[in-house]
Length: 252
Image (cartoon, rainbow, N blue to C red):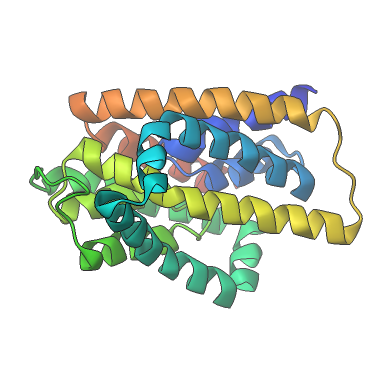
């Protein structure tokens, strides 16, 4: 039960803060010389973070489900942005799984995330919203999301930064990034659950506690990030990623 709470908290908090959830789920167990969450636990925890983002952006999702002109446009942009992650995920699934088994490479990738986030401070903030971006912008942000399939590369960090390069405001870039992440989070969780079922592995009942914790902490993480983006931007997260990645790289 304590493990479920721990992994649920880490998953929920780091899924949306630009610090790489995959990096933390690999590096923290490695630094503590313990085993990380198993496949069943990881699969179920995605349900918690998926619920968090769906609840937080329920009004946007409701608007998309109406499928009127603005709704169709946003659905189209998300569909375009999701293609790179699907393609990369299918083509390089084995390579990504190999990286998960090498904490030192994951630590190095977290440092890369930090450098990207620090570089974002050099960008001039725009005023565009999702209503103002086009298919090419959605594709660029989607390519950034595909890069985040590499463990240690933050999905939210890459997609928000990509949104900023396309002239979006920080809040709108985060909003689009989180909406774009819904298909990826749902797909990753579904594939993992299918693997669990096909392997005959059982799902402990205590995992549901982790799912609830991941949901609540994920919701809080989104709220916290949106507030911090307006005040301090991405730089502090970049400093954290460089520091934690460097520490892990030295220790490991």
